[in-house]
Amino acid sequence: MQTIQHTLTTPLSQGAQVSGYLLDNSPEIAPDRLRPAIVLCPGGGYAMTSDREAEPVAIQFLARGWHVFVLRYSVGPAHPFPTALCELASTVAWVRAQHDAWHVDPTQIVLAGFSAGGHLAATLGTLWDHPLLQDYGFSAAQIQPNAMLLGYPVISSGEYAHAGSFANLLGPAPTPAVQELVSAEKQVSVHTPPAFIWGTFADPTVPVENGLLFANALHAHGIDCELHLFAHGGHGLSLGTRETSAPDGWGIEPPVQPWLDLFATWLGTVVAN
Image 1 (cartoon, rainbow, N blue to C red):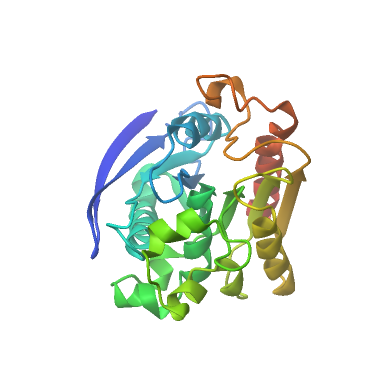
Image 2: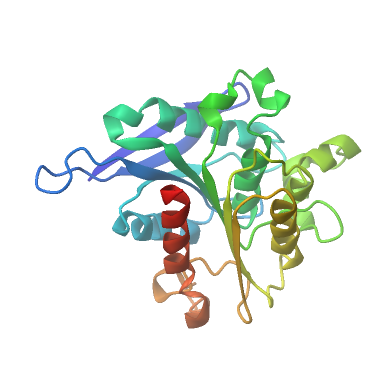
């Protein structure tokens, strides 16, 4: 396995970090294999990026045969929208440009995100062909994602908004037009990639309606979507295992642990199609 540390330079920021984890092909096992690439955005309310949703999740993705790139995007009111969005777009473009060298299938670049990271993934998933990103120098072909994984995502800036995430993302006085643009369920189109969404009904932080609104919008546009909502569990569960539990033991939630296998099965069907 190779590891790569990459510092992003975008029109709006310098210094966001990407950690790449690349599986080696073996002459004994499909030496010309092309693998999906997961671009992973940890959550943290656009105030930080959580370690619990970064490397431990990447390791599980690697175990299933996928390359992984963990993006530590810019956060906080000092880096307002669309700074993080441009960083994610730049990461996708970088991975796609290196697909030959890294044995990445350029038609299988998957955005993955948890909580506010899920919002970031869903925002690029719905705006990858928007003039906004073209104005910052990206072509749609460079940054088009092929699928999304959204774990207990922040989605809507409306009635069910997670206020803290949008305050950090947009600052104190966003215009109605910008609020509408970052409400991902309102930006879904026939060009939005398929999505796997999971969360819990008991989430006390980001209302479950966020995932439901996005799933309903995808369904209305005929986009492949799989939605899993577990009955119990708080916010920020990550893998739901001891590996990603908090120091006090919080976050071990066996009922949600199957989400990763469910996602792997779903992604296999999307790739096959």
